[in-house]
Image (cartoon, rainbow, N blue to C red; front, side, top):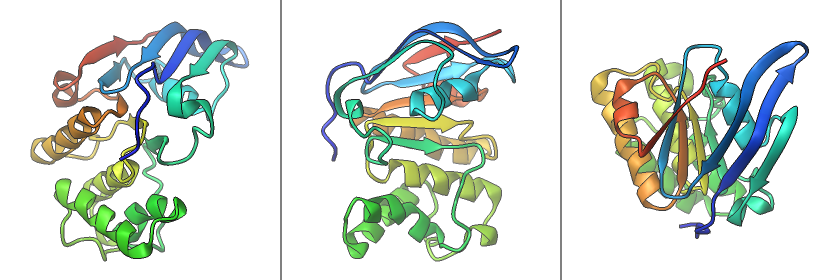
Length: 212
């Protein structure tokens, strides 16, 4: 498992995002700590996805400062440091679920055998055992969503950013996701989830509401 620095993972100070005249994210301060599940909530269009993009380093703030601590201070975009579950899911259609989940481990120089073993563990934990050879188009959207989460967690990263990770799930399958998010935090990962889901919100260590 990746060793997580005990310092704050990401700090935002006075950060906002403007796209032309539109305020995409209102000014805010935020510290993201290792070992916690932090849930970001707010109405649609309030800036939840924009905030995750700033935390991921995909989007630079218009104003304010972003400081990355510990493992994120250098090369934070590698999958063992920052891993994401986008709303689009972003599974590679030509790869099976198992191959999609194994890919970050392969890119980090794990052997294919070891990467597939790790992928199988994550898929099993999310109730997807036996589906590792299926292509994304051969499973439901909810199963794709859980596979996307499995891919994000396969290397036990320093920072996990999940955008509406239960949007296509029922209560029973949402519990798989909640359990895996809590497991990741217990292992030292900082987990940030944008969601409206009350089950996920109840599992949070901290709730951050945003509005604009």
